Image 1 (cartoon, rainbow, N blue to C red):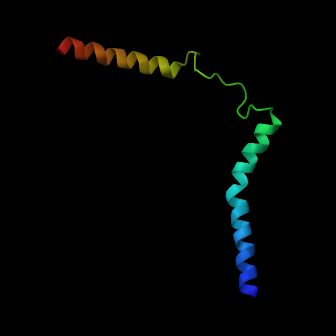
Image 2 (spheres, rainbow, N blue to C red):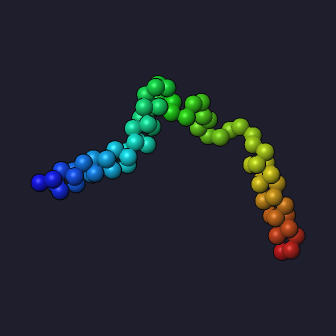
Image 3 (tube, rainbow, N blue to C red):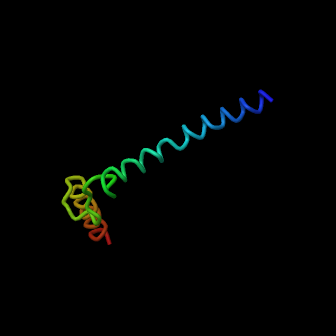
Length: 69
């Protein structure tokens, strides 16, 4: 009988550890009134230096490909 109780105890411990991140996320979601990550822009309308660099790189590669054709 002690083996079954030990198994049940360890299963409970493992379940608590496994679902702790989910519980923390739910807690943060409730604490901030439905905004778990703060104020985010849904469509990424703001300019980003990384996006501008990638866009210029893509345009330069397109220019090279068009010139070779």
